[in-house]
Image (cartoon, rainbow, N blue to C red; front, side):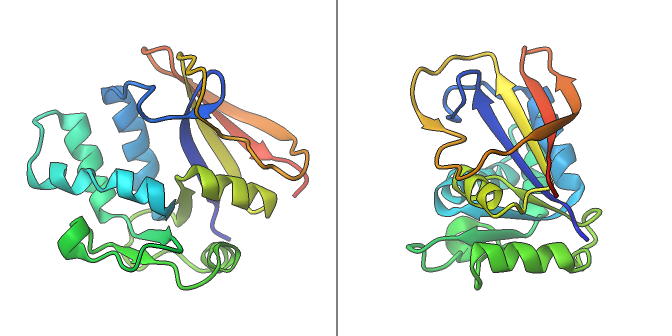
Length: 195
């Protein structure tokens, strides 16, 4: 069975706010490595539209190796977008022919992906990534996440979208690993218990 990994950046006070953190080369490399080991990434509409910045970097590289590598890897990975309002993922508009709208519910899509073999593009070991706060919450409530990779940045935002908002039940987590960045950020790798 394929592993479903939720990976997200957050502040020390638990908010998901990409404007509150400062991504550096090491962080871009970390996420590029995560993407290399995956065959699909699930996004909600808001996060997907935030990520639409990356095709512009593929077309016009920055000259920064870590940033440009991340953009190329992000460009290649299949993206499945869950939205009630987005009508299409037209490559002419987004620059991403590797994106599609989900045709099933989140639960149905996640279960089908977990039980299928690796994607035919051969991009990795078959891991499925989840990169949107709303999807992480929903998938935690459905008990479908196999690993949480939380990158906690040394910033107190004071307000914003809390990651663990609207969680229905207590979820115990087992620490599997940690990774510390020179920036002071730390990634904690947790496995939800009770599976």
